[in-house]
Amino acid sequence: MNVTEESDSGVLPMNHSNKVEQSMAESEEGRPRIKENTHQACTLPTQSGARVSQGLAGVRKAAREHKEMKFTALLHHVTVDLLRDSFSSLKRKAAPGVDGVTWQEYEAGLESRLADLHSRVHRGAYRALPSRRVYIEKGDGRKRPLGIAALEDKIVQHAVVTILNNIYEEDFLGFQWGTDADRFRKSLGERLGKFGLELHPEKTRRIEFGRYAEQNRKRRGEGKPETFDFLGFTHISGKNGNGSYAVRRMTIRKRMRKKLQEIKQQLRMRMHDPVPQTGAWLRSVVQGYFNYYAVPGNLDSLGLFRERVLRYWGQALKRRSQRHRYAWVRRLKLAAQWLPIPRVMHPWPLDRFAATHPR
Image (cartoon, rainbow, N blue to C red; front, side, top):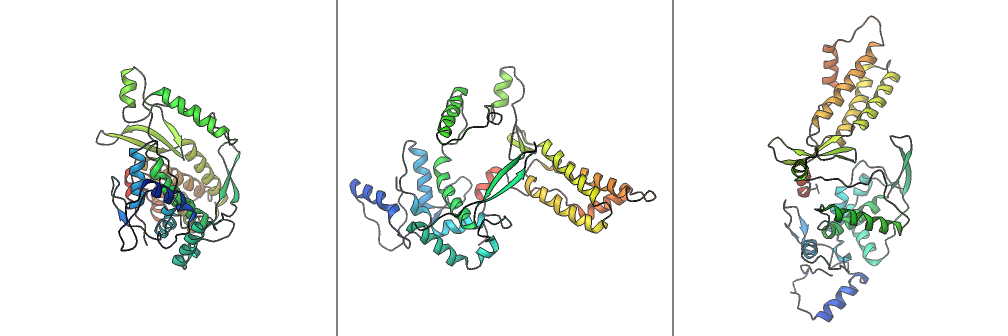
């Protein structure tokens, strides 16, 4: 389906017959119509009032109302405005790809760069660069391969994901019946198998989770809803302070223990370094930890992490001298000077839809 948009010129669009409209939809992706689709008008169709283009609002509405509809022409939704928003959504300090271009370097002359990228995408001249391969340590000692894409590739990928999300977010709903979930899991496994992929047997399971999970399990005489770990967090089906349902997220315990052990080892190696030097290092490490895990409802876990870091630092300082004891009063002064206070740094999940980016 080709979702119509607001005309960029002063001429009102005419009604076409079905054959003409179908022909236009089929040929849309093959035309390098760069100027006509450079910008899109915006509207406020989402629950939170987040800005999206009128064209994407039409795509979302069509996907919601016509589940069997097939979308065949979506390239014209990749506009300069969407590419700009995608660029603003990228992490400023992310590692560069094989081209070595950073976010700050690309920002210089941004508009001309985006116009050129938009032109190449619509002309079919855009080619993605190879990803830079790096490896990170896993908790079990193995290494996980990661591919770091070039910055322009990240921009295009983010733009495409934004468009596709307006279609597929309407389909990503929980399953009411376990048989439906099992059927979906089987179909997904068969689909991935066609591409030589498979679901991890230890990380793929069906659980009862959601707003009514606790009530349903209680009625059947079962325990609390199961939890699951994802992206460093343990997700819990619980309640907020008002007694309403809420998904609680807490740092995975083994992840915290692993990070604390790494800090403890480093503090022993830095035992004889000047206190300000170690303090500056700890501030950077703790703040980086908070930047990721400081989600609503996880402050108690972060407070415990900060307390353990302070304890390990005090133990390292005590080993420097047999005569000088670092009392808790002095440790608290060091904590106030060097260790950041945990505070929420990420919005609630529903608030993410209303996120805006500086221009």
